[in-house]
Length: 259
Length: 365
Image (cartoon, rainbow over all chains, first blue to last red; front, side, top):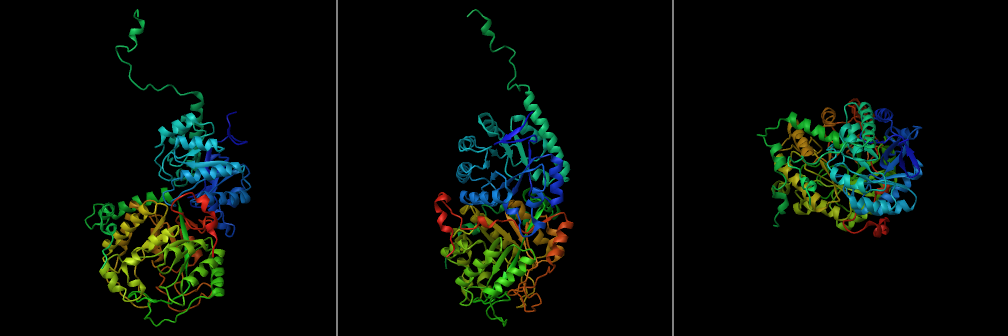
């Protein structure tokens, strides 16, 4: 069976869903169901213990087939992210933590220095650490050495829908990585998710692409199909893509000559 | 007289905005709206963050010609004492509010820094997120507020036209144009995470003002790369001092400004308060605005004693209840978000070096 393994956890679905940006909880839950996902991420800052109408956590924890992966979105430093991880683990009971550290609350670009520091410490503490990072091959290896359960490089800027703008770097990360590579952020269409899976990503995470779609549950189902197709294609082995035309006078003709 | 800084007048960044705002612009309002809507949906999703203001005090030392709390107005002056603040916060929490903006007038003995800091400390115990709109402070005062749980400072320049500014601010500490202009930078220097800037539309030539507001946002963003910046679009309404705005901004121009800002600054929080009508606010949902005030009272306090009939700083135009407002949002398929912050992220931000070494600085004193 082809399973996604993160720490000791195994999943049949390779589609991870984000839970922000939906128009209401009902649509979010419908999208989760339609996607067949088994792992969803939710921001600690959207846990609302005091006002349940606004709370994302309570409806999610009721779903029997879902593992929760809280995230630290809102943290701007390693210290804040570590504190958030502790609270999130206490509230959710999940060993997963998606480390998101944005020095600037607007660009949502991950801070590599703070992220590395937080991941190093959280991995030592036994968390299954899933860092959201820029598509930087060296940083990815550093995080693997630090004990992360996966790396989650961005396909393009979060919420931009620009697809796999970082494909070249992703290819290097995938080739070199000893832990699952999960593309997180920037995807807009199911075909991009399929491309990421064909490249060898172990899973993809989408949020805006589903939440901002005309019909979020239908789009979630479309992504689910694309991820399965992309994975199958990767496993089946894509035909080699020739990088250059074959010359009419063969370049290697001399090999047959008596040399 | 010191010259205004070069960033305020340089059009290095603002050409894109100027083009969209020009009366000869080839972009129709409808095309700008469509673009702004698409960006907002992609970046912020189908949500609006909500907050509510709490006026702590209406004491003031400045003579702003347009303000209902100016020091020559005959209002009854008062401030909330500790127990009253607690009661107001409880009343606000009952409404579901967890994100709060604390306001005072310009610095006075009755509502000084110590009073403000204490109020922040109380509010941070009860609320998820606390911001302040008060008076300009020093870097160390801002740091102290950040340590007590204040994450945002709102400070409007009101107008970036220096001549108009100096004429409108007749006396008091607010009269100093450059001092005001440098205040958001001091707040960020002190570790405040987000600054809110804006012009009070109606005081001066609006397109000129809004271009300078944009330059200010870009200048702050470049200088303080960790800073969150939010931009508000308060528009003058009739108020206690019955000041008639000399440069009224109509619905169309205001909409064009909001759309242009969303397109030029796709990530920035754009705020629209209850100064605007219910219909205007509902129309703007999803078209660029990402943060709105709800159930606002512009009198001192006013949540615990909602029948209070004293005059506020300005008249609230959208006076729907929290429930009515949320129902309207949901009808538009937009989720009202009451909590989008976690107090664990409170504390000053730092501009350099590893944060791990500076853990100790978080205590409130």
